[in-house]
Amino acid sequence: MILVRFLLAAICLAGALAGAQLKNWSRRHNLTLLEFESGRGELEWITSSTFRFQRCPTASCPSRPSTEESVEFSVRRDKTGIEWRTVYLEVRLDAGSGAISVHTREGKPLLLEAAAKSLFAREVLEAERLYGLGPHTRAAVDLRGSKISSTRPLLISSAGFGQYFPAPADYEFDLAHSDPKQIQVSAPFARHLEYFFYYGPAPKEILEEHRNVAGVVGPVDARLLDVRTPETLPSFAVPLTTLAQIPHAGFSGMPLPAYPLRIAAESAIGPFLPLLYREDEELLPASVVVTRRRFSPFLHTYLQEARDRGLPVLRALPMQYSRDPEAARHGTQMMAGDELLLPTSDSLYLPMGLWTDLCSGERFSGRRVIAVEIKQHCPVFARNGSIVPVDAGTHMELHYFPRLGAEFFLAESGSLYSQFHAAPAGDYLRLEIESKAAREYEWAVHHVSAPVEISPRRAHRYEHEKGELRIRMQVPARSTSILNISLKEPL
Image (cartoon, rainbow, N blue to C red; front, side, top):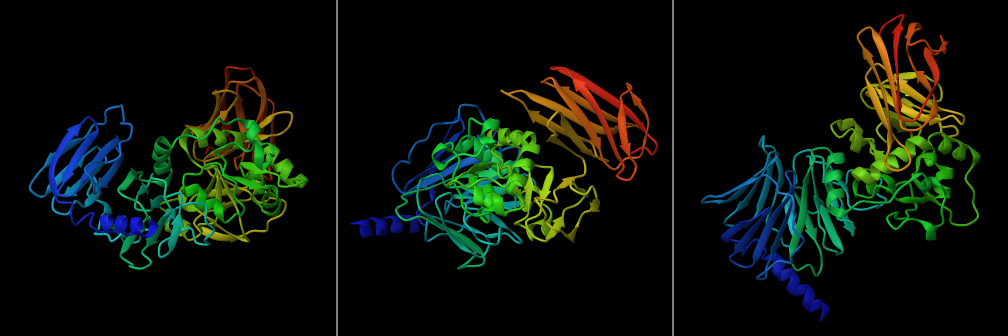
């Protein structure tokens, strides 16, 4: 009986495009209903950059709750098919075959559907890289040329879009493995095709669109940084077992997976793993505990971003620098948030910009590979034009790396955020704190010349060898502190 069901499903799917000649269509709010020669279809706009498409060999398609908010789009029928347009996308359905094609409004091709003997097939674009499909352990982050089984079917393309198959199933993705010009998706017993299409154009924007469809993680707060047991992990935290899974999980819409303590103890990026659990009586090494505590304000803020935007705390380099082809060749390197680059081996690719080793204070230019020696979770590199908050015990340090302007929104208790801003302003360096909590702060401004004047006057300390300026102050709750600094050599 199971074999008969499988064969029937395969026969229906193999003829999905063959019998998909368009007969009629109608529009209802954000939804366009499609009547084919054999079966039905739907295209629904979720946002101006996201749509849901399904094609069914039966007289009707399974229904989903409709999007209430109106999406601005146009739809028209001509001799060759139907075309939808939003501010970002042009989507076309061929009247003869029922095939879908998607282009940007500037004409860049994104998704070009092909005739399929399985659930779905599309052309592979030139130089396209493919990411996601669950927390597998493949060494290469780019999945092109592989064949992968997945129950987390979110596939992200470097061409600027993602595709998500929402129906629970065991999917098989042939990513230009059998045919170097085609991606093929199959799912035994699937009776109809349904997917969400997300236009980014960058991976982080794609993940934000996916979060709106798949749902949010949470609630989250600073207590999630405490070590837990497998039984007390939050329901959204999928336990993983190897560091190799981190980049794939991040690209798969899994912003907050959990890792065992042994992984944190063995790896240089251990202190930055957002969720940790204890499998037995093991304890974290003291060096991991200290580093994790120092960066707890930073990590807590990115826990909130995981909830608010669906972005992982730890990000593979191609996610953060999606337009840098060299970053794709170093796909297992990790970023913590937008600011920190974490070595995972004895060599490190530095993307464009200037990078400061937080442990030594040394600065490096980007677009090159450097040798690193990992000792007790050092080095950690901060990007030029960033602010990194650090818990110094009695106060909070705000490390700023000029010359570019920077800002950081620090998650406080509840839904409050303190804001920190730093940037050159004419001949001055302007430092600003908008604090929601009463707290003692210390600015640590790196790679600057000696101060000539600080207005208003503040006690300060300047280290000539490092070129580091420190200014410590108490800031009351719900108040703003602004410093204008004249430097011997303006930024």
